Image (cartoon, rainbow, N blue to C red; front, side, top):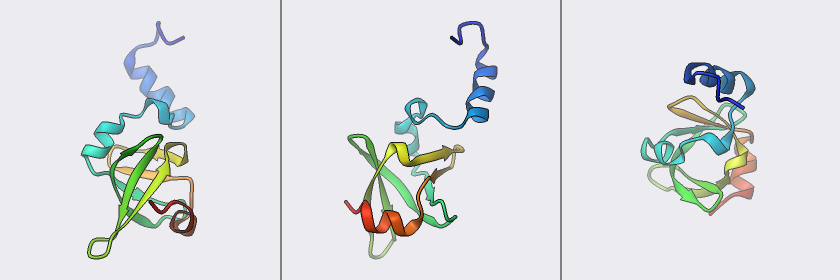
Length: 97
């Protein structure tokens, strides 16, 4: 489908049509310890790893909590910050690891 499109155009297409979680470089996201932001614009923590089809997010520094959030709940990644499709309270109540 994209054989005649240059890599520059492909990047533009991906940004215009939204983020495809299957095309994300999850190893790079984990190694960069990307910060995580919720749908209600709350800084939630950072990406610490992968577990099956989920990302492991750690919230808190002194007393930390781990969450396994399905990758399909990711809305966007801008190279530094991962935005989720869920509010803070949804994650806290449903995805504790």
